[in-house]
Image 1 (tube, chains in turn yellow, cyan):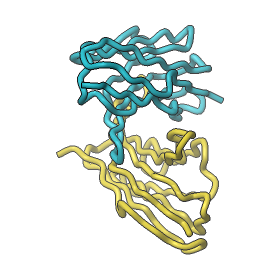
Image 2 (tube, rainbow over the protein chains, first blue to last red):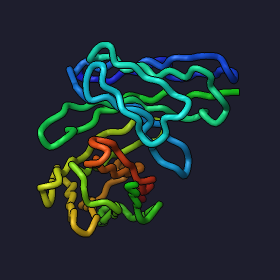
Image 3 (cartoon, chains in turn blue, red):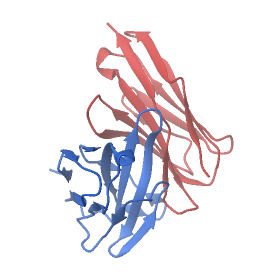
Length: 115
Length: 113
């Protein structure tokens, strides 16, 4: 089954404690992306990657890091989480064509609370 | 910077009614526009993708149109059903920065049986 998986699904942590949210896709997609969703602000792109070892900042990259060492995985790293990073996080992937990205497939989301 | 707006923020209709959801964007330099559906507590499901060279796409009771020059897209839902109740989001993929995505804040649709 084609899917994007994220782990963990729920996480409560404290300020300053480094954490990683994993994302994996089994569709051999070139493009992967992280978003955060906040009430009233909608989804905002954090980072995206168009291929292995290629990453770009989205709209709200501050406080986040990513890496793309393998095509299927795109982990999101919060080195020193703060309460304003409490949010619902989504990973997504799609293939890349001449016309840009194709249909994006989303993971189930990770609800992060930073105390 | 691209800005995407969806109006209305919420919509309630009786079952069987046809309806239109609106999406507007400020920068016409886009690769494509996608419509998504989000159910409460769930991820996003892609409904339709329109490439910048296309005018519309259809899937079942859904029809999405794109007028790139005016920065507008509409999602038409025919013969609405209670199962259509969800939040509908539109997103555009930009030319610059290439393939960066911008989402609207969504329209929350309730179809009353």
